[in-house]
Each structure stands twice: as C-alpha cells, then as structure tokens.
Image 1: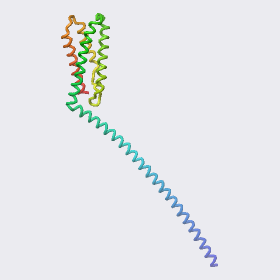
Image 2: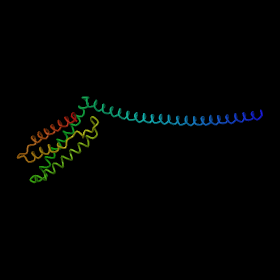
Image 3: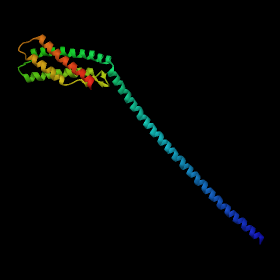
Image 4: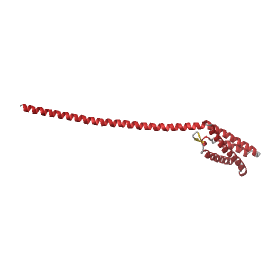
Length: 201
C-alpha cells in the first residue's frame, strides 16, 4: 500500500511540476512578446520625433535664410552709397533717353505728315514705349532691396514724355533750345518719381 501512495505522490508531483513549467514558459513567451512590442513602440516614437525634429529644423533654416536675405536687402537700402551708385547710373540712362527723345522730335518733324495727329501720336507712343522697355531691360541687371530696378519704374512716364514731344512738334515755332529744356525737365521729373519709388516701395 505504501508503494502505491508513493507512486501517486510522485505522479502528482510530476503533473504539478509540469503545469508550473508550462505556466512559466507561457509567461516567459508572453513577456518576450511584450518586450518586443514595447521596443518597436519606443522605436516608432523616437523615429517619429526625429523626423518631426528634422522637418522643424529644415523650416527653421529656411526662415532664417529668408530673414537673412530680408535683413541684407534692408541694410543695402540703408547704405547711402548704394543709392548714390543707383542714382548716378540711372541718371545717365535717363539723360541718354532725353537725348534720344530730342532726336525723335526732329525725326518726326522731318519724316511724318504731322497733320494726321492720331497717326503721329501712335508713332510717338510706339517709339517711347520701345525706349521705355529697352531701358527697363537694362535696369533688370541691377537690384535694389532684392528687386530689379525695373520694378521701380512707372509706365505713366511714356505719357509724360509723349505730351512734351507732341507740344514741341505742334508748336507754332521750332525752337530747339526750348525743346531741349522741356525734354530734360520732364526727365528730371521722371528721375524724382523713380527715386521716390526706390524709397517708398
């Protein structure tokens, strides 16, 4: 009888030990799976944070560069020698345009039937528009406060000059000195308008 009891105890012990081993193994596997899941979760959080940080840093660099460019443009505009260089250079362009307008006046007087005022007006506007666009194309090579100099010009200048040209062409007496004075006077007005635009825009 004692042998049977001992065998039963041994069997019970083995069965209980086996259950404990199975339970421990299950918990070990479950713990390992949870650790892997936690590591992946932490990795995804860190990766996302690094990506967000990289994007934020990129935006910050772009904004910093934009601000540096703006500050550079502002500081350029505040330097008196920059405006002086622009004024000297553009003054020569405007003076050249004034001399060309005097040639236009003389040419229209000689070559056109000025009795047809509409046709004469169209020719004058065409010549002055070509001159205006040619000067702007040369201004495009220079910048001020980050903008091309042609951005500071005004298409109304064409009408200002056209009015002076027509007044000289249709004047009762031909007077080259008066024409020269009036043409250079309107270009002085254009220069002032240009310089005001440089400072106000």
